[in-house]
Amino acid sequence: MKTIQQQLITAWDVLRTMTPADYLTFRDALGPSSGFQSYGYRLVEFALGNKDGNYTLVHRHDPVVAARLQEALTRPSLYDEALRLMARRGFALSAAVLERDLTQPYRPHEEVLEAWRQVYLNARTHWDLYDLAEKLVDIEDNFQHWRFSHVQAVKRIIGRKPGTGGSSGVPFLEKALQISFFPELYELRSVI
Image (cartoon, rainbow, N blue to C red):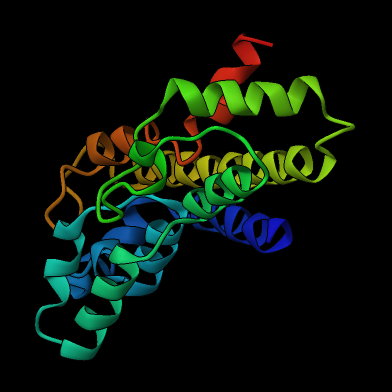
């Protein structure tokens, strides 16, 4: 996964070589097309936990894709599955964590922070959970690098113009940098 993510991040290095004049030669041909229309990207974000049913609406015209996205929206995220594993291993996680509405973004919980804190303070005892947590951090860290590279490429090429899909462009992309898939794994660094 990390190798794939590194390839995706590196792709922005190539795209950033495009000048504004280069981009203007084909921007009109893009019309209203946008990354919003990438159901593959949306499937990845849903799997990582960035759940928002509004992102499925752009695919209403394609019942197969819309159904696939709707099904992914209701499926547990990678983090949900990690937390379920922790519960099976005896960590006290409440129904608010384990039986939450999976169509909504995950929200941090103190009990999850405490469970991860115990894993990190006893890494040898809980090595597989510790290792899993660090791999999740790697995934999020790489995803954030990709997002940041996206923002920088857009700033460099089109500045603060609206995005091709009707988004606000750079402000929308910068807001995405604030989204964390595994919030307690970052917060616990401040409490251990």
